[in-house]
Image 1: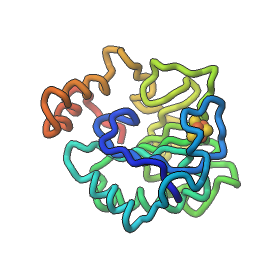
Image 2: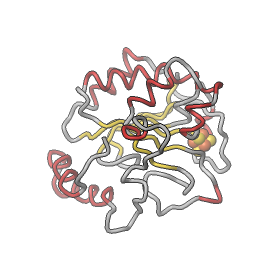
Image 3: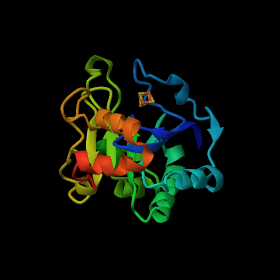
Image 4: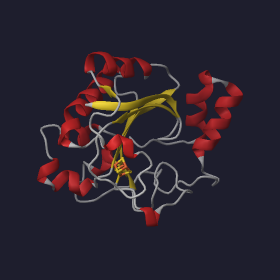
Length: 215
Ligand code: SF4
């Protein structure tokens, strides 16, 4: 697997202060994709579980880091699934399940569960161990810049802990309807708190203002 970037910190792709990895390779080719350079499976740097994976696990250790976001490109392309799964597994082990894991895929959950061409030995492991899946291709005519954590209204923010217990029903995350500029815009509030109080207060502030958990 290759990756285009690792962001630390990232406050745009999931709640709180996060570490994000943008993996390379995507066959979805959505019209107006905001980063078509990541369609190339060899874009960026080669991923290594021993070096890149360990560095990400170490970056997740501080208390103010809420979790890991895995984006693309397309993390669920079959070629990427082994490394994505090993990263998720190691994050769970090294953080003692204390960090949440969000994964963004252009494929829908239904496609990931049913389409044979997407299935590998790691597909179910990934889906069973992430907290949130943001699914669906970016659809230009459904683009909505007021949405938080997703680019077009067809995309869903799915609570995977609950959904994988009851696969016949898709349970949306509490973040699904969050909008920029709304009274519940925890991400912007978080940004202000970070500026005012410094990193040590971030986790406490997030918990205080955005009570509840997706996992
Ligand atoms: S799934 Fe994401 S990276 Fe792939 S084409 Fe669509 S918007 Fe671009």
